[in-house]
Every structure is written in C-alpha cells, then in structure tokens.
Image 1 (cartoon, one colour):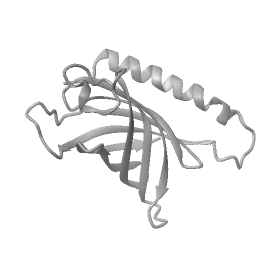
Image 2 (tube, rainbow, N blue to C red; image 1 turned 90 degrees about the horizontal axis):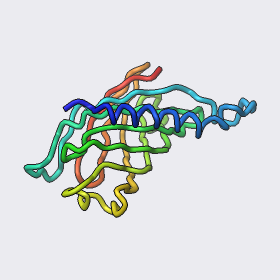
Image 3 (spheres, rainbow, N blue to C red; image 1 turned 120 degrees about the vertical axis):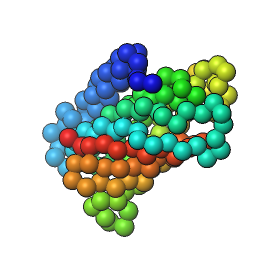
Length: 168
C-alpha cells in the first residue's frame, strides 16, 4: 500500500509547521545558541517485526519521515505511515540525539510526540487514544556514515522498525 494523497498533504503541512516552530531559533544571531539548523533527514521504513504477531498485523509500514536536526542535537519532524493495522497514521515529534561512547557514527535517539491514525476497531491498541490522538515515545539506535543512516526504532511494546535514510 502506498502513502495516500492525504498522507502527503499531512506531511507537507507538518513540514511547514516544523519550519514555523523553528523560525525563532533560526532567526537568532547568536552563533553559539545551538539552535542553528544542522541538516535535514528523510527516513523510509525498510523492515518491521511485531513482537507478538497477530493475523491483522501489517508489517509493511510505508513510512516516510522528515526530520530537522539542530546543532545542539535536538530534532523536530513528522512522519506518515500505515500503522500495524494498515490505517493511515501520522506522528509529529520532537526529540534528542546522543552519541554512543562518543562515536561519530553510533547514536541513541529519543522522539516524543503525538500519534494519530488508530481508528475503529483498533483505537484501543494504543494507550490514551481517547480523542484519536495519543502521546508516543519512540527510542532508536542508529548508525550514520557520511550522508546515509540506518536506525532500529522501537514502537512501544508492539514492534521494531528499521529505517534507512539520508541527510541533506
């Protein structure tokens, strides 16, 4: 299943929202503030494995994410994907990146944000989804070499998803 037009529209609006939210940080003239934009990254899901598979589970998330990375290692971004049950879903997030053992390649990333898209009959599959939007925390371990990266992302207690992508 390919991401829908609605998902691309959401991604476009999410990128605009991230840019607007980050505008004040970019407008600062302080070179040592840490909020200067370092780069952008684009993520694609390449593999998903559910820890406790169910017949309804979809292991092809078709995730596309865009992430702004700042000099102080904070991030902000948006993702569109098909959730574990094939429903169009979105995730708006902020987060932080920490190098592992001072490595220039290995890192730990923690994202937190709002998740939308778990609808009937699966709305109870994620906690606190009463209004159709739920908080989510997504930890990841990644490896970056030059402009390319690979990440293992933990989706709650449900699954691990591998992302590949590039920085620009």
